[in-house]
Image (cartoon, rainbow, N blue to C red; front, side, top):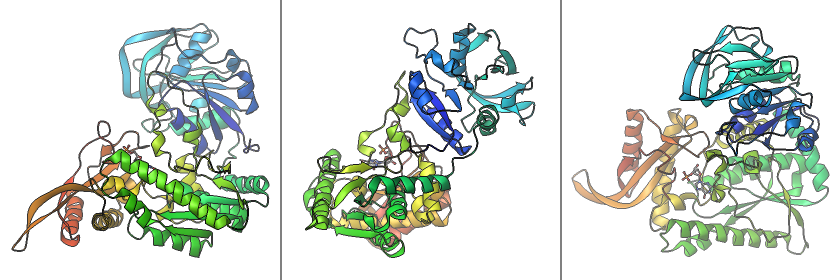
Length: 521
Ligand code: XMP
């Protein structure tokens, strides 16, 4: 365990779509959290030496035949336990209380009345806005427990057995709709579990650098740098740890945003003085993509070609120095590592594999180095900022691995790349200057394989159409189109049509995901 010095909270996952949100909130309290499958063994839980355990929510009913139950040891380890939603129902059921299915599903905002003094609610006052999402609820308390808070519909909205350190909440303190939920979780981890606030990005950086140095020794490390947040932060972190033993390979596939290749070279090569091998493989990629219009084929070609280019670059770097690079670093994050439990169709379990960037050479003889595998995205951004990466990098919007190829519908030609790059630059510039860029998940232009008629001055035009895709999202799994102010949309549209030669019409995509996707291909 790399985080040996930190106090920890174990979260058992019963399939709630909010399990990762609980873990992030706990870390925002500066306490390290780990998600384990609901049926983790006592030995496994104990191996993390947690200060407390949280039982997540979940879509099941405790009485259902296939309902997930935790290992009984969870309640006999002498650790504080907090049950949230399904978690409190499990607790009540286990200790002999009663859980019932209510006819009316309780969903949405409610007022919580805190009637008893309870360490969970310390400093939170007598009433609290909370958020519910449950069908079943506890209807009879188990022995030893008492109710500490209620809502209009739930007499046992919060319960405790303080002597044994068991607490339960019928509502969700982790979601933003419970505005003071984080303070409640703070009370649990700091006051009840007595876990000190010792998880900070500064300490993470120091410890990770130390560990990387030990792991790597005198070996050399290779990293594929894409310019995205994860690989950029991994590069800066590894550079801090091992300096010149790190070499980054940056592949220009010809499908990047305008000026992206220059910006990456400037930042990492010039500013950070990281050894950077820049490979301009535009020709290779565009030759392979010639005449290809099928989206899946485009992705496959780009993924495969990347592997070949990367392998060639590695070979040329290592020429003459047999097996110079022992390690391949990757910007894998914690959500990719968590063993997801798919109970009742939990959408969080449906991670799309093609989005886990890289297409990396599996048959290459490297040892894998994943310095970010314990972090959530928001923590990666904090680490990046702490390492001195500029806001434009750490707060940048996601950009697909296949780049503009999946935003140029139909044929990919140099001319169409030029057109989209120019339109894209206008979108980014206007989103930034209006302050909207950092408020949305993604904002970009898509070049459609459609021409339409227009007038410019006295002339009739017959040119391309571009779509604007501007969405808000938590994690890219679901998304909604942003209700952008009309005057901003007007400015983007008129700038694109006036300034980009080859586009004479702009449309706004008002499709949510699902049923649409964020990208058009
Ligand atoms: P979709 O279009 O599936 O996209 O709604 C969800 C999120 O994933 C990004 N995306 C990709 N990221 N490689 C990536 O690294 C890809 O091939 C890829 N395709 C989509 C997309 O930009 C959005 O944020």
